[in-house]
Length: 165
Picture 1 (spheres, rainbow, N blue to C red):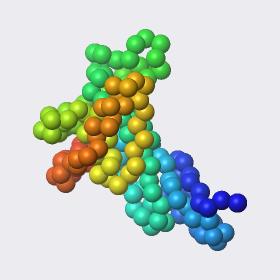
Picture 2: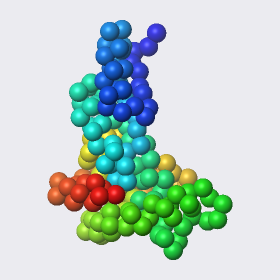
Picture 3: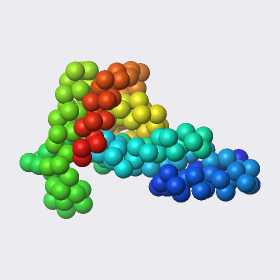
């Protein structure tokens, strides 16, 4: 009935179980999609090896953490009143500030935007990021995350900051 399947929001244990079940049916597990960003790395990092173990690709949705990693928002510049992200960002931004400072420093070092560095980091981690874009300008900025790679020391610096969130 199908050549392969994909799953969304499965953890490493669930992923292994479904891969085993699909292998019994001779249907490969091709894709695992999870929320994967610098903000979620601490909880998501084990999925890289889990996907390698079952030979599937990891797709990272929301690699910009709903826009939090773009540099557009601060505790003094939250999404407008009535936007459901306003309260979320109000809660997340204080604890995320050291990560955002590191992201900003790396972006400045590379001459890229925070958006481009955050997406490129996800690529460097072996994922296929699928960032959202509401405007042509955002789509162009997202495209600027391709065609270059962060150096391993920059990835390690971002990893270290992300693990503290």
